[in-house]
Length: 168
Ligand code: RTP
Ligand code: MG
Image (cartoon, rainbow, N blue to C red; front, top):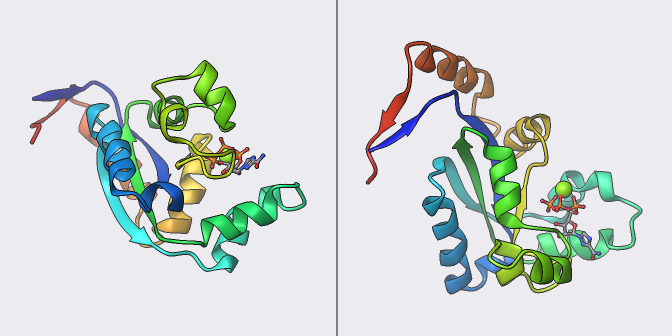
């Protein structure tokens, strides 16, 4: 039995092509999600064309790594998740660790990128960097998912106190 005390926030997590290509690495990242008591609200495997990749990373267009990033993100399948937790955005970011692989290895061993990242681009995972980005990114990956409904339902659920989930 697991107990949540306040409404659950959502974040968008991605297992990038470098990690999904290797079942052992995929399993390790998936295990990290489960061990940290995230609720997996939605999950799907998908394959980006370069247009999706360019659109998703348009904020980085013009940066020296943009072309490499766009090509990499459309080089193979990915796994996308909507994850819920009391502090989902921050928790998933801290479990991923720093973007740059050497910083992750030296300063954040035990994080996903610190342990499993290959390069600054092939760094295993993505996580939304704010609640606002999470809403935008969830709509990008899961257009059929109603964020309004989720957050309204959470407010109602927690009005009467903590919520208990059975662990499977
Ligand atoms: P993300 O958006 O993927 O969760 O990662 P982030 O916030 O930690 O990093 P951000 O600065 O938003 O960069 C987005 C992705 O671009 C790739 N990148 N490559 N020097 C490089 O080659 C370089 N720098 C960034 C990474 O894949 C990073 O996750
Ligand atoms: Mg980012």
